Image 1 (cartoon, one colour):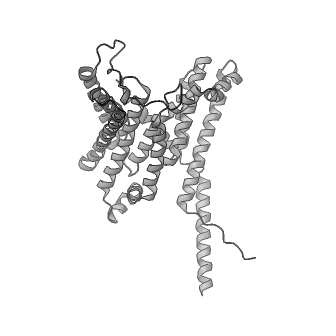
Image 2 (cartoon, helix red, strand yellow; image 1 turned 180 degrees about the horizontal axis):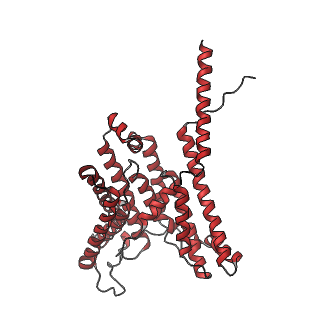
Image 3 (tube, helix red, strand yellow; image 1 turned 135 degrees about the vertical axis):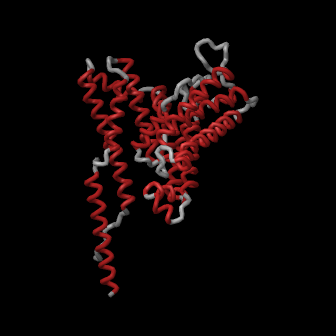
Length: 372
């Protein structure tokens, strides 16, 4: 029988496989830490673990909680992958998700449209506004050499205070005495639930579609390849003729659009009226989810659902036992430290790449000898 040639695998494919394995390893270690901490703290560890791991699936409502917790970070996770695609480290996603919720609510309570077209218009306006906002840190970096990370952090608070001012003096419903909020959203602006007894809506499906579209954009289009080239070596990208400013602005705009869309979906699908007077924190959660997914949009839904799962389990655990909800925040931090560590499985990954390099050289040598 003729000898079969060993299968060659590219270094990029190996890196993608190991990134997935690293993500699974981090999730597994996080679960292990949860088990250990519960055994140390809980009065009845086995019962507490049952609450944490099994209760999120014991009813339709709890499964809905998982999806509800995952939906906003699904959008901001994908957005962070896009925002970081060209190497610009920016947290504009936090400001964009806030602005998206604010603009969607403003459109919903001011525009006189009675059909579901109102929700579509609100989400589109929110997306465009968030996209334009995300351009500002990139422009500041390219034009004035500002640090995009610090600039975006400060910009988020500027957006917050402007939004709160407008809410207080222009959109506030004074008949509502429980706090500062807009009037109730009209039926045409509300995203109706697709699972009974939950607030899960079409937004989650939209987020899944966007994950595929973002992956395709980053890995199968010229703009995505250019963005990856800029991120890996900006000087080389410039030398080969890539328009760095254009690509950076493009991915920033798309990332801001997705984050703002997440804010709009969250507000119109989960709340009867708009009342955000602080940053919601979904941009930071998106950064965590994107890090967990190694900035690959196709892995973001898995990471977002895992985060939604452990948060739902933690909420149930907190209600039924003496274990504090802050436990999960600590575990999330540990998980991110592990996933961000370049040493995790690094030796095995490097060994695999070296093996494939030697194999490729061996096959090339045998091919030349065969031709001779």
